[in-house]
Amino acid sequence: MYLIRDFKDTDLSSLELIYHDSVMAQGRQGYSDEQVEFWAAFPYLYAADFRSLVLTGYTRVMACNQIPVAFATLHPDDHLALLYVLGEHAGRGIAGRLCEDIEQEAKRRHISCLGTDASVLSRPMFEQRGYQLVAQERVEKEDIAFTRFIMEKQLS
Image (cartoon, rainbow, N blue to C red; front, side, top):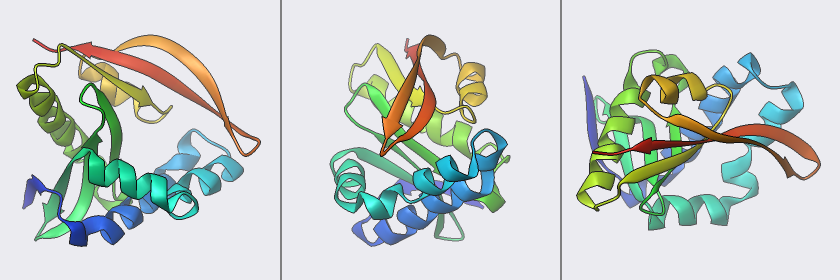
């Protein structure tokens, strides 16, 4: 059974693993090997940035039998910054459930428009949830280029 709960400090290493596994398991569907390897290493190469984002943001965890299998982070209040699901749990509606949870929290914070930076892989899920494409941009990190989609959803 999958249950959404608040992030605990003891979850941090699990979230690093979820992030890495998610990118490694699904990333090659839209990205090169070089892009996937760099992207998957983010929690380790930029550990302070990853930790800061998770710890200062509103982070929710999806657990299966009390073991974290996915997470999402709202940071700042109007931006869904992270949404990752372990590869073996992908395709079960978990990302959508976490996204709904984050959207509800944004509404509680009186946010009228929630933004995100979607990957090639996550863009269809966000579109299904009513997010609209605002812009497409090319981002370079250490000479590796990525395409991402700036998306927004009006919250009622």
